[in-house]
Image (cartoon, rainbow, N blue to C red; front, side):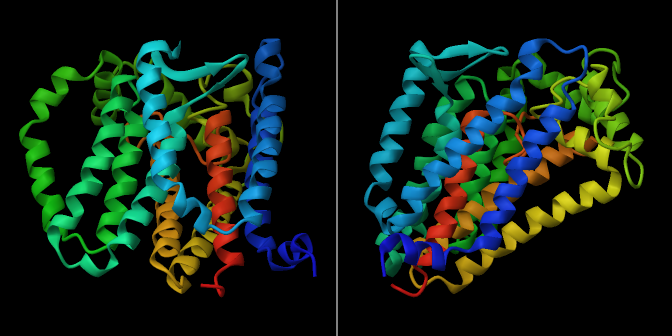
Length: 366
């Protein structure tokens, strides 16, 4: 039997369908919230998103065919290359929306910090598998913390608080799973609380305003609190069954900014209501449950940590993004996986799904 035929027979089609459904839904939401009076560039964003989704699924093919152990071999190389890319962003990166986050290669631009999320997962998976006989020693957790803080510092400089928070949360989730005691995080939290006044001083004005709006929701609803206020109106106006397809008036009449990026969930909730929102969460829950099962049934530590890391990455993004949109968390600029507009985010999340598919395929071979 040919390699291609064996690959098709062993693919987890339900996991693939869940990811494809989310990506397709994202394209539809971006299209439906563009608005009749939006610029031509805004109305064409759904085509770019569809193109990136297709590119992501094409990239899955070689990732799926070869063993996931190939990523173990290049874990440090990928991490080092992306770390170098983050350094380059600081010097020659392209700026946009008040931040310097992108590297341009000809007409192609990408965001290295997005891919660093997945690279960090693979790196920590290799690190812990290489030292699986030493997991009882507390000092083994020091290098992973340093390997996390280095890219986090570079990402904060851009500034990109949301991605920096994600890197820390992904690493912390993996460290807890590997046995790091919760009391160490409590200690770190206490230290963080003690230096909060110093950290506050280094935040940008817009980041301070986002925190203040979270603490005081009625603060300046026509100014710094406008995004969150309009987002909650959009979500609430959807009711039980929603206003219907192409009826997201908050988005189409341009009341809700960033309705295709950070606040894409508001557009879905307005059109699909509680039923549509719950359906979306159930798809995410299914995807996460598949990842957790792969972690539970893994035959090697690398596969277990990789699967769990991807689950934690997707889960934290979903929780924080929807928390932002509904006003129960501060706005920190974290996209909704496979739905929010953005090529780097789409490609990174689909590559993560590709790794899960690969681990599923080879789960009995090691």
